[in-house]
Length: 364
Image 1 (cartoon, rainbow, N blue to C red):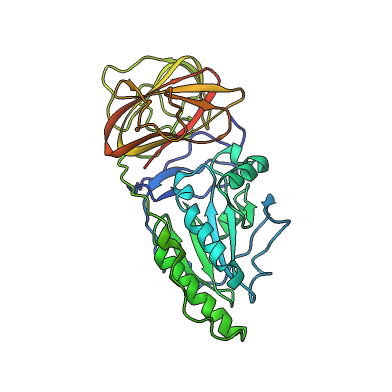
Image 2: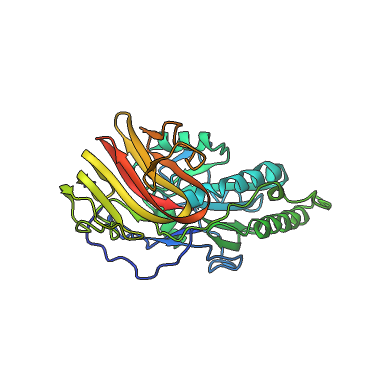
């Protein structure tokens, strides 16, 4: 198990159903925070609205900038602070909107500062973050928050979470999770007009519309929860002992119950992940439209993807699945497995090459 994780944390009791945000209890020292699947529980009048801005604390590195602070922007820019992490599907679904705002309003006085607070250890690697930002077309400044210093300073518990800071340095908008894109953009426009007045730039005139109008909202229809493979958070493991690490051989279930994780074959279970050793399979009965998995491997391996007993080679396959029904795994990232036409209950089976490490299922 990685040294920064301590098994035995007490999981929070509240579960917010849906798929709009990930809720975490803030880490203490080196202990592991506990994840819960969340929904869009925020609004523009979140708990920090009206408070003064909070500065970036102890950054671990920067992407798309040599360095940045909130303080240097106050009095000059309107600032959108975006807490995210690159393997989080909830965060990824907000990227098109945030990028559209940046392109439309950066020359009018908007600055976006992304705080990349990692969920998994591999997300602390600046090379991984840099590559993910390039692949997602993100050009605004990204701050690595590897030790959760800025996360703690904001008393944050969610990915994604967005704060808007006005020209005077006050947090005037606080939104948790996905959604509210039109509301957020209208607030950006309002703050940019206020900035122009304060700085004596004159009337900015009528806006030409919303950048988000051309982006189709993603329907979130998942009823299955975020499900983790590592012993520190594998409370949904049904045919083994949750919280137990080490090499273990698992038997296939006679009946697969909904929203329960079943490992088959031999696996090496770590605090963060389960690594396939031999004859490794995963069985999971889910209720959703889409299925994603966070995975990695030291050398290239494959995952065969089956839905309801059939190899996924048709329109139901996710973007990461080839026409042969295989996912090639090497990079540490989110892989898209299933993309059904509509939500429903299905049985997912993965046949996993030795050496592949599985971290988490997420659903959409």
